[in-house]
Length: 257
Image (tube, rainbow, N blue to C red; front, side, top):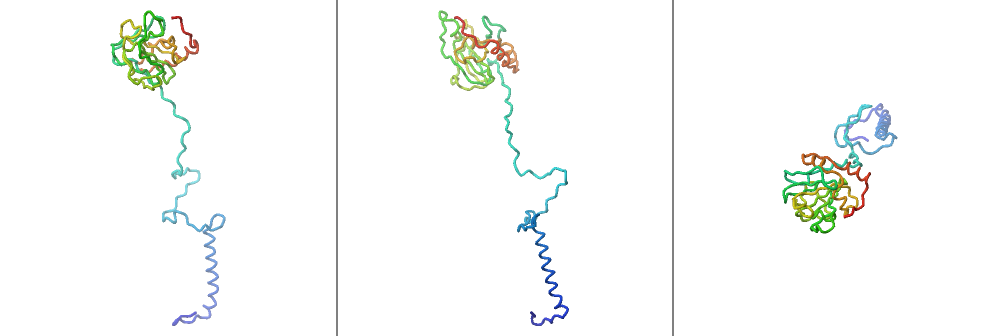
């Protein structure tokens, strides 16, 4: 079709037109074939880096790790972290305090300190027993009520800690309550069979019956090596010795009172 003013094509131009059309169609087909996937089928979409106008990502040389940021978060560890070691505190607050390395009749320690000095929880744990009433009588049975006002604590380390002859017990310190190492739980006193001398009777034992077994609760291993450590700011643990006692001795029955 000719527009007004255009010259008529020459005979050579009319002969070349069909050949040019065929070559153009062939080139279009080749371009379409190059835009497909590896299987040869066209995807109809350009890579994101092309569509976004950014540069093409650099390829990683063979055998080298990729430096690309991970597309997913690292897996969450399934193992629990190791539990931290128990912390121990000397059971009477405010120095000075003194104590014997021996005790008459059984393995315990009397810690001598001024009346009213704070009694502290030895370690983290749960209160097992609390006696808020002094029922001791010299004419009554010797043993069950000797402690007067007292508190026993089952430490998170599995060891029982017992303090008695207290003058008072802090409000809220009841059986089943959780306490922390160094928490104020009572005050030094002279209740029970304390011979009118202010001190804290202190015993370490396995929990055994947990409550009521006063003959074990009062103490079955010598506390002084641990008190020596705690008084100096150390952290010596009675777990191993208490475990050995339980393994070799068990939980003895109550003695005659």
